[in-house]
Length: 290
Image: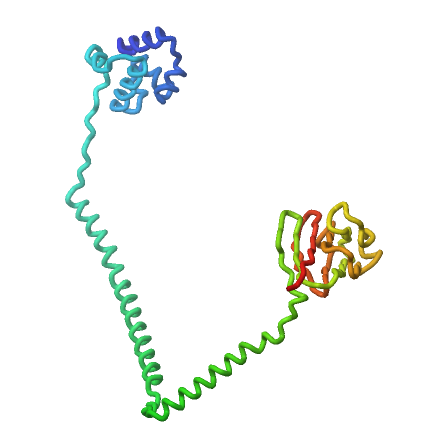
């Protein structure tokens, strides 16, 4: 045991620190700390690391490292000079020759690949230029005269008139304003509201699938409104469920399982159903058609 090791151990014990605490603080393995305290430097990984470990250990105890090195200089491990490795001229030349030989073996292969690539590229562009030359060899158009220009303008005018007439034709097949299309005016969770522009009373047909069975109920306006049709747990009671000329401006169709309903038709128009894992309330409001 050296005086330096005894001093460090004494300071550690006076500070009330254990070897495990020093290991945790300095990140130096416990066996190396014991070797420093016992002066057994041969168990440390070299003299350079031994001095570094001693410095870190002393700093963890709050000691002045310079003063410690000066006081216990004789106990400090001597840093050994690292032997320099010099390659002989023969070995150096051998390695350089080996490297040059590897490069020289790859050069012909690379040149061969480049030559093939350039040859294929040249053939491709040559064939392509021949094809383009054939396309360009189209008969020249006869020179246009003033009369020809006028005739083209007349033809273009006729075509434009025909296109305008064609675009106007579908407007004659549009449905009358009284049975306007459905519009989703509001969607809030399982509640969906449609508006139907019509002057007729509301009529509906609800087609229920055989499987899965679904609860279907139709009321007037709200959850508390009067039933417009009996509540059917499935299609076995009545399919489709039909309500004609309802005396209300709002139908409330309550669906227990939307997947169990095939389609819902109101005044001859089919609703676009939205899938929902929970009970769905479909409100259909009648608004006067303009």
